[in-house]
Length: 380
Image (cartoon, rainbow, N blue to C red; front, side, top):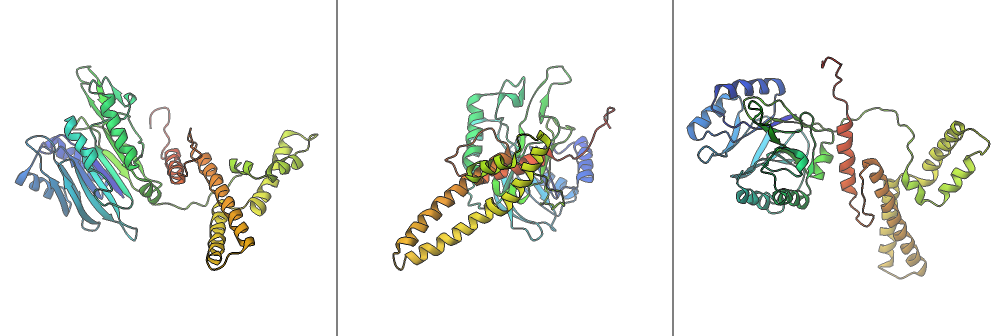
């Protein structure tokens, strides 16, 4: 399933229709979001009818600025949750999956109006609970490195954008293609540009569609690049599982003894590595165990003990409850180490049990590491 969002900077011209027709034929988006169409009223409805979608919703342009069009086909069950001058929120039901939310955004170029976007596109305020994707032209950047000769960059404005992202728990989905989505002045040699368009999602959406990716398509008929969002469900693969060293093993007292006993001082390095690898594989399966399965087991035992203690006190059960509680916290720490190692993030706060963040980081890294194509020396 593909989605396209594009600041087309005018939907009335012949060049726009030619480019959009090719986009639709090539990528076949299930949902098309067009912002800043600069067309409204009967003329806008006429254009929407020609685009080949059965359903759509429009936020009218104000004069020649703003406006949001979102189009889809009836085969995709879509409900309009909220329309706003700067965003449209849809609920999408695809196949047998749980519903998810999709917000198409056009952030106002005017700073004080754009600040309303940060306050009003709020999951709690809109009562949206579940997987959510947000994409479009935010007219904001996060850091200076996302710009080129961009005189409108402001630390204060970027911090407002960053604070909104952090408060809502959005994850930047990254991109393939050129880093700048808006470029102006190349013909005159006065290059300036910025990454004004992007796609963000929450942890629940990323876990639902871990293979999804964003591509910056070539800029044609507009100063903005269309965003192609390829939404892919998890695909199981029969890959060989290679030995991987787990940092969480260090938390087990028997780990170092196992390594010492497996390492032969008089042997060569390769033989010792193979010997330790074999010993750790067996030890991990029979002694250390699966962290997630151990966590479920401890929680089940703890629930049973506490249920029994609620009827009558028993010194032995009270001691077991304390031991199980300590074991549970130890497993939580091991789980953090597991996801931290997989995500390869540069920082971790051991007091913050935000395992979902590391899980999402891992899926993002996995998606970015996927090889979609190979290019030869001639650019083919």
